[in-house]
Every structure is written in C-alpha cells, then in structure tokens.
Length: 178
Image 1 (cartoon, helix red, strand yellow):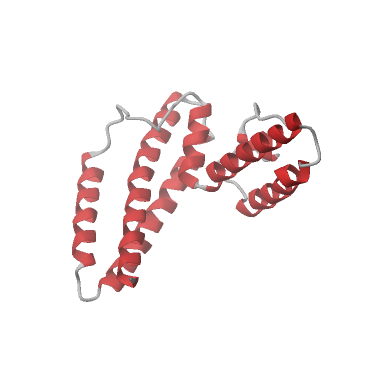
Image 2 (cartoon, rainbow, N blue to C red; image 1 turned 45 degrees about the vertical axis):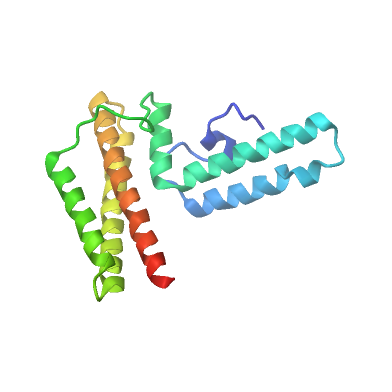
C-alpha cells in the first residue's frame, strides 16, 4: 500500500471516468477490511498509525471516485486543471439564464399545491441533465487535446450547477416531509 498513489491505483482500478461503481464498492470494502485499525491493534504504534492513515486515504479515495462530479474534478486535476476553485471559464449565457429560470421554478415549486410532484419532475429533469453532462465529460477526458480539456472544464462547471440544484431540490423535498 502506498498513499502516494493516485486513488485509482490505490484501489486497483483503471484511471477512467466510466467506472464500474459496483467494482469500486467491492474493492473499497475489501481494502477496508484489510486496513481497518481494529485489525492492527496488536501491532506497533507506528503500524497502527499507518493503518489509520491508509484508512483515511481509502475513505477519501472512495468518496471522490464514487461521486461523478468529484471523479471528474479529480481526473481533470490529474491533468493539471483545478476546477475546485474560482474559475475564469465563461459559461454560455443561455445556460446561465436557464439556471436562473430553474432556481425560480424551484422557489415556485416549494410553495405550490402540488409541490411534491413539481419537485419530483424537477429532480428527474436535473438527473437527465447530469447524465448528459457525464457523457460529455467522458468523451472529453479520453482525448489528449487541449481543446478537449477546455471543454471538459466547461462541462464540470455545468455539472457543479446541476449538482447544487439537485441538492436544493432534495432539501426542499425533505422539508416537505417534515
């Protein structure tokens, strides 16, 4: 085990966006059993500390690779593009206008008589949008060209909007259930 490896190598998986999530989970659970600090309680203090570090790294790797957005950001960061900070990427004004409209629709849906139905419809729409963006990112990241990387960065920015909206819809649905 080496926590200097990238997350894919650490988990023994190919470094690709299109990932078999079941295999990811299987590898995570397998390594989790091997590395769990309780299994190393009888070893030296140094070995116990290393077990804790490996487990923390494993958890971080799993969380990152399990999330389509975080996995995309991680892959792009490995290629020298950090999308976790503010960016100078300019998004299409039509896309930004659509995002404003979706936010207004969310606010209206929260207070509508059929709020659950409207929120569910919005959630389905956002999920479809995310699936499309994931396909676009997947196509971009396999290319070695600079233009494909630039396009991948734009796609990630759009995914960030969609994931944020998805969380807001989930929060609104949870508030209805209270």
